[in-house]
Image 1 (cartoon, rainbow, N blue to C red):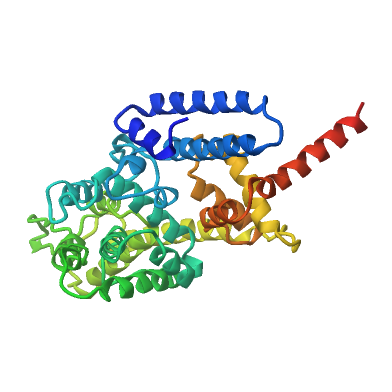
Image 2 (image 1 turned 30 degrees about the horizontal axis):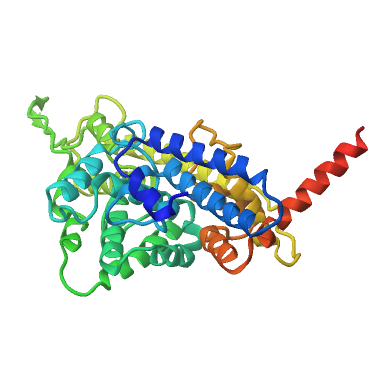
Length: 394
């Protein structure tokens, strides 16, 4: 069989479907040949080839873009999604489409042209954007995770800047205190990068535009009862603008500041045909606050019913088993999509109250430092358990 490096070169440039077909056929061929070998060196050699092919197949199934990228290697693949441009250009998935356009243009023909492939970066950014959101209660560990990504310092700086930008820019300002803490740690790391960079300007909060949008410059120039109105605020347009703010905390912040500004500038001459503008803001804030509390309650209310056994080697064995379950495609997300392996391991880790986010390192160390037989022991035990169960039911 061809060396795995040569095989990777052979696969470059062909479709994902064809790559999977070729690898699957090679895997089947080796599995057939293994049935003809007894326990000897040849069998061990073929088993190692099989494991390498299965691992490569997993990489390609998860992320062909990352696999083909000039700037990312296999170590980065577990940390990026595999979503095409149609997914990112869907307002249903990302309501603030301006951010998507700005990000693509930035790497396509902007300040960082050719620094990242735009689609690769969007997949990396969105994966880490969601990681920050889902792990904000562990702010320092979240920062550690980001700092340990297999990127060079400049690439990390760019990524951190865009995470901040997609959360509203910096200086960080988030109503959720815990979220604010997590983002401020990222902000501090981002600003610690020496020298002026395009991101230090591009990812900064645009205060002039922010103020202009807050005011929603719509004036009514009609006079009512001979008195000129001073209404600069149109709640219908405010509601429309809220769609551009990706998170509920940001929407609440926007409404709170707009409401405060309106009340500070009231002259007493305002004439409202319906509910006053500031009361409409108040009602919307209360609604959003309730939604936010429900989301936070749902995410925090589940009690920790199970935990990982204290048995020696339990964590590594669990990772081996979960890796096999993932590769067998036995589990999908609730929306029907296939989870990334990173998502899968982190979710199962949260369920058991243990950190499985570094599963790839654990597997690599196990494969590197232990023979195949040791890595297969847990599966041998599972075979015996199934055989016993089968015998008991005969």
